[in-house]
Length: 147
Image (tube, rainbow, N blue to C red; front, side, top):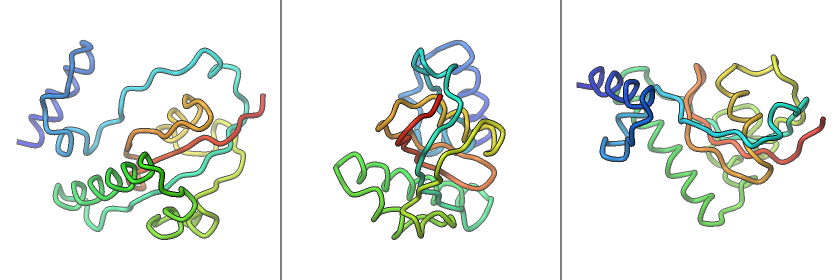
């Protein structure tokens, strides 16, 4: 069932079809969200970002779904106005949690590709959708750029 959803989502993404009718908790477990970069993204040399990462307790569908849902709940709280620094310190599984999720400035080639694609695409202050990397599920906010 899950495999069929992933195949369908991939085809729908490839052909630009809407995906709202598919259960997003299952459909997005292993897929990157589609993102539209702003026109300045190509010129960005360094990004300063902060993130919250939730590492799945297991790599089976249940573990992935639980981690995805936890990350989505955290993202919704951030959208409601919760403080990013406090949320990162309380919930993030990554080493940057100590610093409120702050990763400092980084160039392309430092982070995994999926993470960089999101971070270099986001405008300052915008919250990313939940997205997966090999490490877990992330929510990212870019706080600054240097060209």
